[in-house]
Length: 307
Image 1 (cartoon, rainbow, N blue to C red):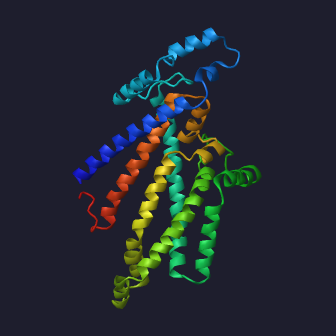
Image 2 (cartoon, one colour):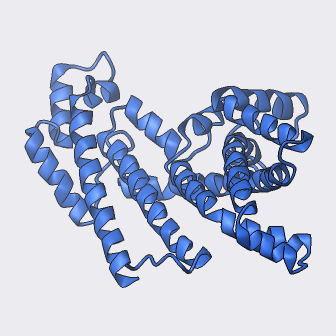
Image 3 (cartoon, rainbow, N blue to C red):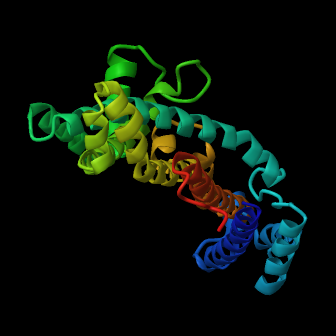
């Protein structure tokens, strides 16, 4: 296990360096001047040059890159060009909102997907199977940028059950979490159904039935437990994506998370914030995928992660 954790740590460090390097140079190649965005169209050339010198943007790109890498080695993400505050403080302020939204969306997805997927697998080829898969197909087909405004229109404006946007009120997370969770639930339900159908035809399930075990023991303890591995893979991938920032959903609901901060910073050409956001996204993604393999070993002792 210690060898696996070492490889995971090295993989995270290497990925962080590659991603941060690519993002740094790509951002500087994109047309647009952060100084012009900050000062506006009516600023004088003297003011622009002074601000550019103050922010260090007058230095050669290789010098800016070495300064950026040196800051990363000291766990310094730099200073925001727009907010004029440390980027680490911005990330610490916004990231908890993204974590909250991702976890609630994951919970909603699991609560919807597991009953649907198991029901469809146990009634394969009959009307419950068709109903479950039709519902999941609808969930996959409906895009977030349409579902989000529809939920706002119905449940926030017409019924006034939930806030329209923001994160100030207690139930503000419900609509954005449902928007994210329904699409994920549809994918999980289909994956769980396929995995359950494969397991239900295995010899150990027939053996369990022959021993006279009841339905809960056969389907819950044996079938479901062995069908979880591909589902855990999908959960790990999707949780990494959600933690990376559900950009569209956060923008639609004005949710003050990492995704919205990333979009705002791209528009403002706030290089340090964009670099930090994408760095956090990549590290979170690869870390969760690595920890998913640890969960494999817990679910199936035949898998040895440490090898």
